[in-house]
Amino acid sequence: MELSLYGWDNEYACALDRACAGQAGQLEAGRVTASSRGWARVVWAGGELDAVLCGALLESAGAARPATGDWVAFEPDTGRIRAVLDRRSCVSRKRAGKANAEQVVAANVDVLFLVMGLDGDFNPRRLERYLLLAAESRAEPVVVLNKSDLCADLMSRLHEIDRLTSAPVVVMSAVATGAVEQLHRYVEPGHTAALVGMSGTGKSTIANALLGGLLQATFEVRAADSRGRHTTTSRELFLLRQGWLLVDTPGMRELEVWSEGGPVEVVFEDIAKLASSCRFSDCSHRGEPDCAVSAAVEAGRLDAERVANYLKLSRESTAQQAKRRDKLLCKAQNRMYRSPLRSKW
Image 1 (cartoon, rainbow, N blue to C red):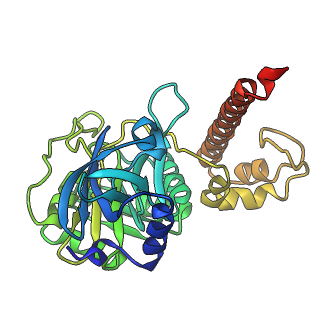
Image 2: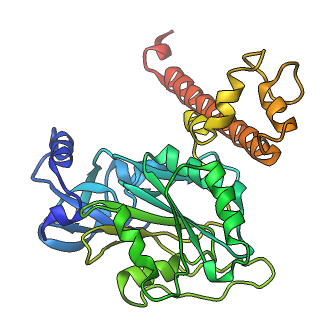
């Protein structure tokens, strides 16, 4: 197997050398094409195998475990994965539920296709959340507006999207012959793209067309809200005949971005620029005197719903970071109180 087809290069080779330092025995590199709790399917120079996690990786949780798209170092004779190589990018979200934990959707992704339907599922506020997902991941976003055949006011919706992002926008009906061919121009050979979006947006139909066969099941969406069922149930990496790689992901019922804070201002650059002109540096944009953001909303130069979404995502990001700091502080305190040095006093 020629690993360069899967994106292997000198940078990953250096990462492998770092991972092998201090390890007993010879380790090989492979890329994860699918993963579950204790195993991962890996392509490597010798072909393909089902590898198992071992040691600290087996006991780890969340982002520390191998995810689809990761490069790993493993023992070729036993199939045991010893290390996850440094990631260039990481598409992550907050794990569903109350726990403040990270869930890696895909790793080492170069392009993120953000798929949204032009039917009843059309939602610019949700797209802003997906744009934040892309900014946090360090992958290049491409907005894919699917189901154009079901849209009666296409131009007004395109104008609305143009106002909130400078990312490339692709309009298509995935069921039309050859419609997906326009996606090839955004991904270079050896690079990796991932399809993300809500259930029912047509990701599986797009993936099937790109892969040239019915590899993923598809179902009709509900007429009431254009929502679909989960037809893709796992994350898989595929090598396309055009030379680039595709990660198909399950539809997301909910998306809370695993945020570090900064990219919120990147996605809402227009609001952040206005906020720098507010009288108060800590302006909340909720009626303070000389608030440039509020003035722009009142003058009709800024969408009030966009501002509300910006404030909501900022609050989520701030709350996540605070919880992570508290968690790290608790761990540090626990280590300190368990220290053998303290037990002497």
